Length: 496
Ligand SMILES: [Zn+2]
Image 1 (cartoon, rainbow, N blue to C red):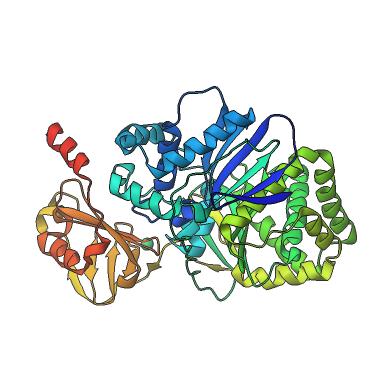
Image 2 (cartoon, rainbow, N blue to C red):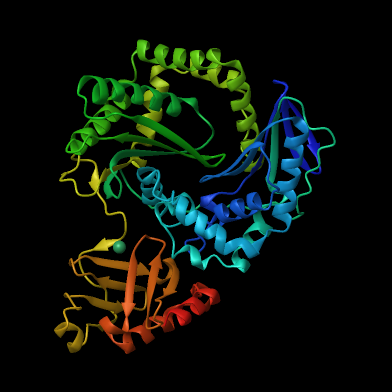
């Protein structure tokens, strides 16, 4: 692999077939958005692709939690034209196409994918960073031209890009990206926990999230590999209660990793799968993997590297470009294999034990499950509490009670928090400092208050009266309001 520089963008190249495959990678994804701007990265990506001239080039673009990638395979000159076109489009997005591309996103509707994974991250980070994956946001109509342009200006700059290229590098390649400072990524705070917790989440799978801080250590990753193998053997092959067992690692920065294990469960077997995941995780931490299990995991890695040389080259290019944009140290795959070979069973056990206090075990909602028992504590995904805090209290007016809109609901506007007792009796509390945003209702007579702790509090004149709405409005700072876009209001006027 070679590294050069084109127009200030690091370019990683490796020899390959006559047809070139190249990808322009940006260090921006869903984790860099806000609740109000969910999917703005995806929209920028769509707008850039829509600006390219029609061609038969095999090309694609992908936005995920961490990165946005534009990739093409074909004759070197055509790939070069594609890359240059993407750069020019990002510098001046065709924002007149926003409505059309939002329609395309609506049709694509991929926001519910990976729901267990998103819920695990949300359990760790709330409605911030990777935790945003769990949410849909206030709606795509809130993605205005200003929001889209500001996002592109901040993140789609040469200082936040890297290119990888397998096969001939297009001759005279230019990457005319906008200038701008290297954007600084923030790492959201982890929700404090004093030991392992289990929680009920949307979705249908069972999940286990492990956090690790400190320098890179292959032991946790290797331990998770052995855990996956055990779960496949037991949950899938022996007991037939699960079909797919997978893991996803995410680096928040060089000193903080989250590793998620996601296991689907046959309907009715969710509790059994959750118990099995926890038991096997604990057992591996106590006794460590057997010598045979370790050897099997290392051999599996080696075989993967052996099977398809071209795929390995490409995977290394992808990883090197990812490291270049995210500021993580790049490790050649051969170094990783070597590290795996020298990792002992005791290293693996110690890494899993160290992660135990960070465990979030997630089970799908609608399942009757009592939890795996001590020391794993039950925790709600958002902040549910038994009683309302002190503060100005609003109950639905008589008219609402008569009309059946009250359902025992109560709103408390306190000095430290906003709280709402919902119809089911649960109290949801948003400390004012965790207020993410307030979204006005379409009729303008209420608002939805969204907390970074995943609580939402609906406040509407019809339910709590005008004084309650005014009291909450008065507590929302100006910069926390999500303005309904003008074109949306026009549409409402036309409709009425
Ligand atoms: Zn809540």
